[in-house]
Length: 378
Ligand code: NAP
Ligand code: GDD
Image 1 (spheres, rainbow, N blue to C red):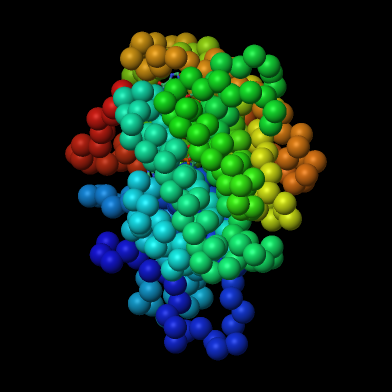
Image 2 (cartoon, rainbow, N blue to C red; image 1 turned 90 degrees about the vertical axis):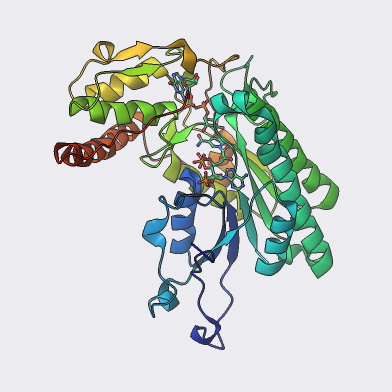
């Protein structure tokens, strides 16, 4: 992909009298949340810019369905998404993009987001998660000052920081809400705490319209395959079709408050539509152990998880977050946000998706193609 795929309308395609659509910059657009947010904003008529990391292989699988070849006339109608090569660790690329794009809203979703991996790569995790957020905030601050948008309340850039329930870590109160103290238990969480506080500080120090969404775990058929729910549902599909005998997991007793990613990106957008910036917990308020999620997912295809789940200590973390359950009362009250999907519906949706993938894999395997890939210790 050279240059980065461009989905913006060509200058000649834009009617002279066109009103400028709201413009959003999304970091992490190729990730799970980025892809759902992109769909949401396209539906709302935004012009969307996303940053793409340079990779030796394609990394746009989650958003390819929204790609329109700019050489086609169709690009005029669908010309809402432009991808730019940049990286959260590269301050210059971020500053240049913000100046060039002149966004109304910035969603900072990019991160090395895997907690277990953050123990193997603590420095890179801090560079992308903590310093990356700081670099982006600086880019927004400089841009506002240079353009004078900092002195016009109606013109302020609205900034969203992807904070995490992982920041609560070793919890001493349940459920967790916006005032619950943070006690991070992983390099990832430590970095997210810094990014969170930096965002609050830029709001207070420079008046930036910056909000943190403290989102509890949210999943979908687009969830990365090494997060536990997807690892389980993917295994359910493959076990059901005879493609693998069992799945190895770490701590089955950890409890999480799992929601649907499609619901959670709506909360992100709602936060940036408020007249004043603030921080919000986004959660379902229900919590299940990993073991119970296994039970649900396997039961969906008529199997008993106890026959197929084995424990392997390599998937445990050096320090664990045992229990997360969120209280999203503030988001409900102030944003009118509600989750629409129960964890049972979520598990069923993910298993159905992964069953279909397993069917395709089996077809390929039966035709003589090797399909399974090696995985890391996540
Ligand atoms: P994800 O699927 O892992 O996506 C992460 C995104 O960040 C990908 O687009 C990835 O690019 C990009 N990225 C990683 N390192 C980067 C770098 N150095 N520069 C630029 N881009 C980089 O994560 P997600 O589940 O969508 O989560 C979105 C955000 O919310 C993350 O910040 C995560 O930490 C946070 N969060 C997630 C949850 C959850 O349960 N999902 C809960 C709370 C907070 P590639 O596609 O090229 O890898
Ligand atoms: N990944 C993984 N793999 N987790 C396992 C496994 C396994 O084989 N076996 C048990 N677990 C347990 C983990 O120890 C953890 O307690 C729980 O399952 C959830 O793990 P993940 O799905 O990897 O998610 P996470 O909670 O660590 O982090 C996710 O949610 C955070 C919000 O609380 C990520 O999306 C983070 O980016 C996010 O901030």
